[in-house]
Image (cartoon, rainbow over all chains, first blue to last red; front, side, top):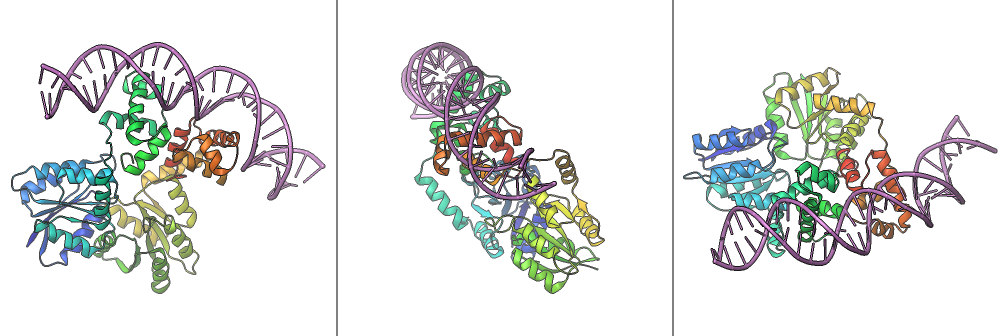
Length: 208
Length: 208
DNA sequence: GGCCGCATCGTCCGAAAGGACGACTCCCCA
DNA sequence: TGGGGAGTCGTCCTTTCGGACGATGCGGCC
């Protein structure tokens, strides 16, 4: 019997997953979690074989699904974590894999794929959706410059339409610094204007 | 007994909704649909009291949930349509309401809110999530300048990071014309830079 | 027939953005 | 212990963008 913890902030998705796995004889949902913290707590208490983890929690707090994954994987006798998400952005995938996820699935996947992935994870195998696998490979080939957290911070403000001086004011630095960050961002992303940088960052999944 | 049709492209969400409504004595899910077309067909065959309709179908074909809503509402003895979506973009809300939806709910809404909305819809009342209601009102107050198709065309290119001269080349017009379009876009959106215009257009749902 | 929105083009000018240097601290890691 | 990346700041200069005019032609609408 595979003991499973389901972590997702949407009640509808949770009950959908529970209903889905309820049809399988060899899978038992032993706990559900609506927040990353709950997910970790449930894992500690229930000691499941597999955790099914959403990446986008609570709308505002992004990437905390990856945090929870990291914390769970750091536990003794840690269960395998399957990441389940709506989007297939490069950054999310990479983040999840780095955090120790052994699988990455999209929410629009057919149910049988989900169930197969849970069984595979329980057996210690890695299961990636085909779309995801090809993405990862292409990502490996094209090396990719990741932005620093400060650079992302700047880029987010720029993306919201703020000017250099406004960004400088927001971050309590000089305009020169902002321009310097932007110059680095441009070379890393291979563009030469703020708007192009925002667009590129969006397609790469750096920005939403 | 309220007869309900559930339309959503995600199997997980569908089974979640079915499981949810299965607990209610007075609601019966008579059909489920994975595409807008299926939703219309199911409505014709089953003649339900309420249709629960997702807006984003199939990842690529956007806004077809609104189309299905329109077609359903055009039927004789049309059922009430409740729109259920992940996002609360102004354009989506407005589109859904125009299409004849009698309610607009977010997927992260608590289950009881969902159930209450279905009962309200069956009774012919309009149920909007509080967030949505306030949005609609603010939208009513601030009249809203819609962009012309040419302006949107320009803005899309700008959003992809093209410069004025590049946009001019793409559209076979002079740079002056592009700047003129942009100036109009700025005043209509109440901003004063291309990046801010892109951001504003995105939050208004004009751009994706 | 006149008004208005849309699309097109133009000039002039100031402000913002971007490129090209250099320079100074941290801090991490080889 | 030394190199390198990140973050901070500076100057000088060019390009781009945006604002403020104006002007034309076309189509719809009262």
